Length: 617
Ligand code: C2E
Ligand code: MG
Ligand code: MG
Image 1 (spheres, rainbow, N blue to C red):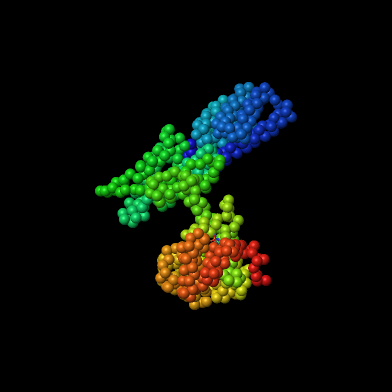
Image 2: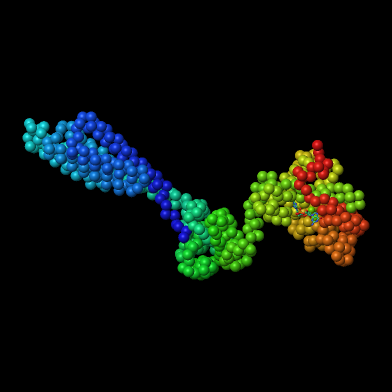
């Protein structure tokens, strides 16, 4: 099962690490001091059976503390118990020596300071508890043994007052130590609380109190390798924006909080987050009470989308859920997230409510999502290359122009995407112009346009960019190329939207000497009136007519009619898709001016086509 984060916080970890190192050095230092004492005893031959016993106890305790700290094994209890044993052993041996009349004046500072050193590292509770005990021991020791030996001139009252004073000094030093430790413990706790509060704030969505995107991703990454399978679901509310606009932000917030609460209440949810806006994500528990996961998702969807009470009425909530499950050994987290996102979009666009990721259905959309992610970088990294295909004179077969086509090379995918894959995506992302300037730059750096024209494909969306013509001219300028060497190929879609604006820009381009060709003529929803409205120089007749003309007499007549139409309108005709010599001869007889197709030449990357071209030296 996906575990909720139960880790020690970073601060707690740091504190416990600090404590461990303190325990280790205390034990080690104690052992060093003890070794020195043993050495002194050995040299002065001062060993007695009592001192051997005492040293043995100290050695065992200090060794246990050092090893436990080194191995990180119950460091705190072992250290505390060890120090309490040291404290007791010290006092035991001190009393034992006193009873045997082995007390010396040097014992006086020892009984005050050695126990203090021992309890220095103890918890404040133990320090406070040991304060009266230490005071009591000091009083007993000084009163009963010490002053009897060396304070013979003093009265009993003097002995008692002196002992009491020493007992108070010693007890108070313990108390003081306890108070300092207590204040430090309080400060540490407050600091810890503050830090974990800050951390919580940074990882929580303030409106719904769910995790935010960053915390969710961190948690997924942390737990990834600990599970064999992970299932996640993306939830996106339907029509949230209109709801927000209609009822106001207070209602919008209430809806988000209600959805968050409903998600959290669901027994199948292991972790939940608000990714932003009206998007939520959940990690599903792997075991679902013996129910198929579809059943749980269905329940969750029903729960989330039940109406919400607001003031006097009810507000209906819509949501689309997409979920995906993966084997963590075979798939990456990124792939799982993409899958869940893709299927959520399918659920949304198909108004399915919820759907499970299906590679057969969602594969293409997933691939497109992959292309979307990669395309921008591909343009930036120079993976989008210029290819050129020759266009020839139908009669002389001499190359009159090259058409510039984009190619995606060295992609991260198993096979490099073809233009029909990435051109629509580049169009959607508004990257077509960027791509055009890159490929034009590459082509113009190699081609000699004094001999040939260069035809560029421009989609209507590219035309309406405010700086289209300006940038085109600056690219031509950079390569010292005249606009009269350029042909803009536009498709019939140019007449669908912003017609007037498109016509104005094409006219402006034409005034600069740029040739305008209507590409793929006959494939779109063209009307003949378009040929009248658009400022055109050339008609490129779609390759489908050539292919069909072989099989049907009707298509052959349409091809002929299209060529004649171009001629009658004063346009240059170009027939696309000429794959054999036979077709080339046929369209030449039909009166076509130009031909283009694999028989004339395949599109070739400019970098590979060097030998076939007249290159600028
Ligand atoms: P298009 O402008 O009609 O380009 C001609 C397409 O027909 C090219 O496909 C070319 O490889 C293919 N072709 C040429 N001769 C033959 C032939 O004899 N037989 C067959 N079966 N096909 C032939 P490609 O390169 O895959 O490009 C497809 C479309 O993508 C192009 O159609 C063009 O509309 C668009 N495109 C390509 N590069 C760009 C670009 O940089 N910008 C824009 N806006 N569109 C581009
Ligand atoms: Mg074209
Ligand atoms: Mg074409």
